[in-house]
Length: 485
Image (cartoon, rainbow, N blue to C red; front, side):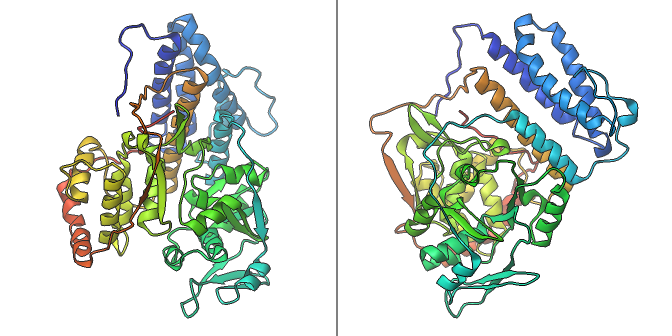
């Protein structure tokens, strides 16, 4: 992959303004350091200082930057205004001192504010072909698969499932609310059972690692939704909130085809594309669709869909874990470097009981997808090379507290803000892939012909701690997308 950097012309006013905007965003992120009770006031003061600093910039850059800051300042003034106080007329008016928070707002309130900022930064998606949706109630699902699925009603409805007869049951509570659904593992398992997917693919999903959920909150029930999600076993960071009422649109922006399914009180809702993916075993990154805080997993280059490194991470993960059998990529995609996601996914795999098996499968997939250098003979050769480039990355994967989650969401918002500014102002990403004949032809990436080696897998798993000890750790940063469009 090569990146062309313009050297024969002066940067445009949009490009100069984008550099300034990135610096403003970075200084706003620093406001989320230190005492969390002062985040709000520090961020507000930072925004006001940055707005004042714009006076020193050329007028043509000022015009590109004022609107972006004023929208955020306006929201913060609304949040700080005490109940019933007269609305502040000017977006740049100072926050009344009485409105300064004495302590951190509840996490649900912080989530609400982050969601409001996310909504402010959303980019409209292009119209694409509609999804064909199907639904099946829990009762009918159990009737269709009596040997694999059981559903019990009552005050605490539950659903039980298993990969095949004779295997132990796994049980999950059914949401009591009709605005809260499971996403990810549970609906994938139920849809795979319904689709009669290969047994190995179902077994790879059980037991579920995490409980992830999606909710359609009203004006004042975010905390109640969070409480219900926590009762069902979800972590706070695993609860997605959306105000998009059209389920088709929400499913359309899932990252991969096999995630186009939800399960809730009324049953399983899924796309035909997801059902077909379960049956074929081929997982696919969706067409370029902006997912708010989560961005997109692909982009178009010369009319060809290219998967970003974060999207590649998802494909590698599903196939290495056996939750899918293969994925397709165009040859041009080999120029997109998996980069830091080698480290991210390896750290995740290293926590598993079959760590060595997963790490060796990951390395094999990397070879087949063109992500391994010729001299790299094993996964640790790759990780050493990548960690030398991203030496701030730490292999410590401790569970995040609420403050860590807010900082993580703040970095997501920052990337979202930068992306919106760049795309709406016509600032190039700087990515330039080199074309060659036939590079738009798809190639199938799978583990076909590869056999797990228990001895080699055990050696790889046992070598993890020594490898981590040999690397000088730093402060873990948010993975950066190397391919943006």
